[in-house]
Image (tube, rainbow, N blue to C red; front, top):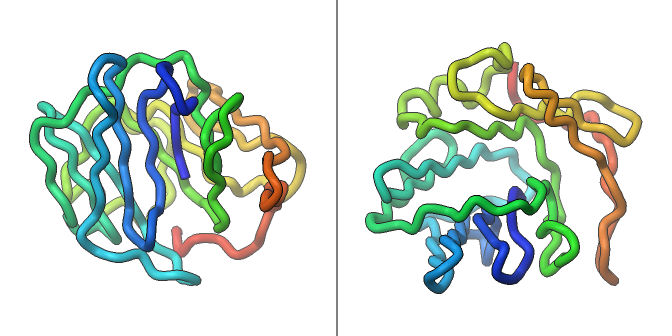
Length: 179
């Protein structure tokens, strides 16, 4: 769903769904990639909030605002020059595609606490919150740009997906229950 990954040595991290589990892959540029799975399951055809935090080498996975998995001794993702990608593994490597709907993607440079995640998961943010470096609401409804609601202006270019089972991104009025 969200990645800075290229399928090779320039991989950093990827947040994915695998067999109904949330999966996070972390690569530090040196050691073999670490893969962490949620204990809980994600449900098809239902909105769910997912989050991953990394602080002091501890990776935490949250499903619907509740801590699901804690993994100590996590690698620190390498500083990759790959673009941040939504819905597919970053170009030029397109090893997986997300077949679903994304809304309200937020990237922070601070690890949010469980209570912070739970209290903000169903709310629109102002875009000026401390530590928020990218915030894509996907509310545009048309066009080929997803605008970043922070002052960083990290607007995203929507493009065609690659592969035999790929669908091009489409706007939907089926938004997440965020108010």
